[in-house]
Length: 448
Image 1 (cartoon, helix red, strand yellow):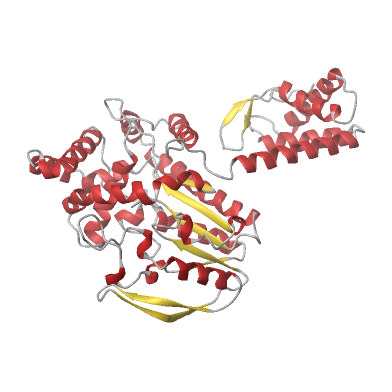
Image 2 (tube, helix red, strand yellow):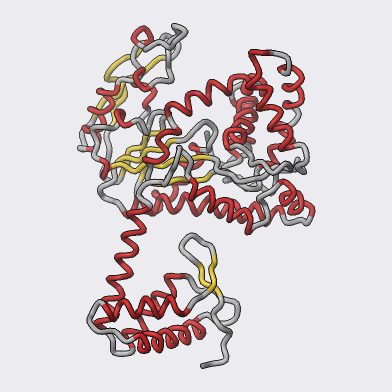
């Protein structure tokens, strides 16, 4: 064998590295031989050695090959060694495994509406980067490594968005409808923009159907248990008309969508002309996008569903994990204050209504989607803290003795205890203008 450094690690498809194991290569080759007839393990092991030699030559020094690189080398060694039939069997075996992976990832694995596999991967990423605890984040800031964490965190999120775009392209031309959903302040808008950028590079364009225009006249809306008109239920929307227009749009026909006036509570039919071109994909970005009856007229094969959620895995000083909803609350308190002219405490006291709607209309459908994007950025909280922290002690004082505001008090205390020991960063210049965080703190290159 040559004097090159041994292969020690291999990069998996999810970006993590594992210990290199020649036996796995030998086993794969052995199975390829066995699919053609009698197989000799010793021959497979000898070929695995040749694969390793080729890898050592191709990846000298500290270079680390990917799983796909290793498989490519296996194919070349088999072909070069006069085993063309076995190489073809190996290619078929490799393709079959890829199809099974794609089938497994067709929907998000979720138990009790929690994507455990995904959050484990998030936790492992954070641990690998030393940012799974408040103490770890503080250490990164103190050591001057915060810009590095920003760069790596942005790259991780970008890779997840890009993976979603690639999966949409892999299902073209069947997919003509993309549905993007997620709870409040999960970052759906930025994710949609970035997904659109990726698809545009492939010559495709997302065109949004404004579902809000399909509300019935206010007097026809269902009412909640208090007798108030309920905008939160999907039955406030004209679902039959939405489905008819979806069929016509995907058939290439022009429709005239309605217009809803939120001031008068009245809808006018046949107002906005709309047609879908061959290179365009219809987009639904709606609270009820995952509600099956909204798109029941469209075959599953023609739809691609994306779910966006802050799946951050950060342990507080007491060992408890930050709640995803608390993370989104902080984002929304900041955004509402400058974008909607709402005071942060108004957002806090209203949050239990937001959560009730999410738990009813969004979160139960997480297991039905095709792709999940974790929008929690590990470098986010040090920048959020100076913009929101001061409101939580005030809320605790105001609501501690108010029986009607106990949800706000408990939530304020929990976030206060999480943020109190965290080092804050006033200067957000390390955050790029294309970052999802800019959707909430301002300074974005994108228009919202």
